[in-house]
Amino acid sequence: MANSASGDSMTDRIVRVLDTFTSERTVQTAAQIGRRAGLPSSSAHRIVDDLVRAGLLERDEDRRLRLGLRLWELALRGSAALRLRQAALPHMESVQSVVREHTQLAVLEQEEALFLERLSHPEAGANITRIAGRLPLHASSSGLVLLAHAPRALRDRVLAEPLRPLTTETVTDAAVLRRRLAAIRAQGFVVTPGSIEQVSTGVAVPIREGGEVIAALSVVLPRQTSPEPALAALRAAASGIEAALREDRR
Amino acid sequence: MANSASGDSMTDRIVRVLDTFTSERTVQTAAQIGRRAGLPSSSAHRIVDDLVRAGLLERDEDRRLRLGLRLWELALRGSAALRLRQAALPHMESVQSVVREHTQLAVLEQEEALFLERLSHPEAGANITRIAGRLPLHASSSGLVLLAHAPRALRDRVLAEPLRPLTTETVTDAAVLRRRLAAIRAQGFVVTPGSIEQVSTGVAVPIREGGEVIAALSVVLPRQTSPEPALAALRAAASGIEAALREDRR
Image 1 (cartoon, rainbow over the protein chains, first blue to last red):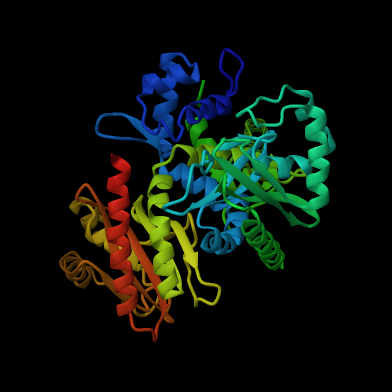
Image 2: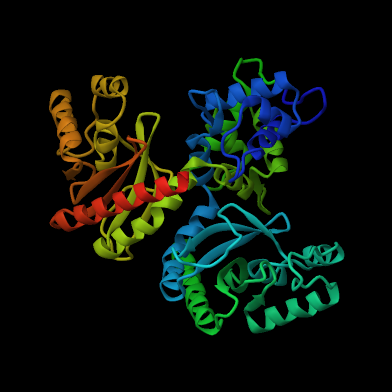
């Protein structure tokens, strides 16, 4: 019942439809969705109609589609991401009031750093990250913290793959990276000048719950800014978030 | 292909499964999900397996299920809610630094006020709202602002239904409420003492884009607090958010 002739489940097809929406592409026609999701036109139209009826997509006057608030509500209401983000937000605001650049919260998801939250100062410098956006583990400061504390099997897998450079300063040598991850575990933070964008430095620290690293807290600074004040603010915030998570468990 | 024997679409069944998760119930077994979604056990297990494979649900060591980060990512990445919330957040922080209670952003969704964001001061008073939570239009300050500016047909429909009291102070007389909505449109704000919880006062203002009211910004104050300073902060923030949305459109 749930499977199409080609053997993929209806759930997969729905995910493929939702996956065609991005921060740069928030409005699409049903035909565009079908093409981008690799679905036959009739099947794309039927799924889109079902999703509109369920409120997961919304149709405007021009019959173009966007993600529905109902999807947002379903995804957030019972989500662990919301719990972490709520515990983190007041402490991220404290970092933000000191650093006045970009402050971000990321978790490990399918071998990438997924950004749950980002606060930005109106006059802050360049920053490639977006909420619900992803960055490679080996290049971003948050990703490096998450990779350093990831299960060994995942670490070995990531290091065995080709490490794509984002700038000329991204570390792409597996042996160098392995030593760097050990240093991150030992020192409890990372500073990555120019690894994602030549003009910026990332600074990140781990956030722990029950002894496990569950997230990374980071700031993005202009390259010429000294990282020490930001690092002190990040460490204080990480402690505060860890205390809030313990409190929340009771 | 997408329809079960009982005629509901697979999309409906997936929504029913996701809908069993709430802020109080973030972890469930497949059997609990099936029961709460009103699905036959075999069908519930199959949908849950599909959702786990797609990353929309995650299974822990005890085989219990929670909402997956992938769902959160799909819902947020291309969402209009995120755009509004990002435009609003810095201005909500400004309100928060003055009022130091609860500051909230709500939109109209399926005849209720749906809360997109909430900032709370650590020592703030009582507050029933949650992010991705809902409140009735006729009782909450945000809901009253949204209802006052809603299409006439929706307003008439809400006023024709029985208006449930949340406290002894909730206005439940349709004629009284209709006059109140006209006053809200004329004065540009609402103050609702004790309407949701006896100990609190809600204060809300509209946020406009392209001439339409698209959201309400509100604070929840302890009953004895005078609403004027909060109202001034809300009005300044609403102007700031409207300017940010205009800027974002360019």
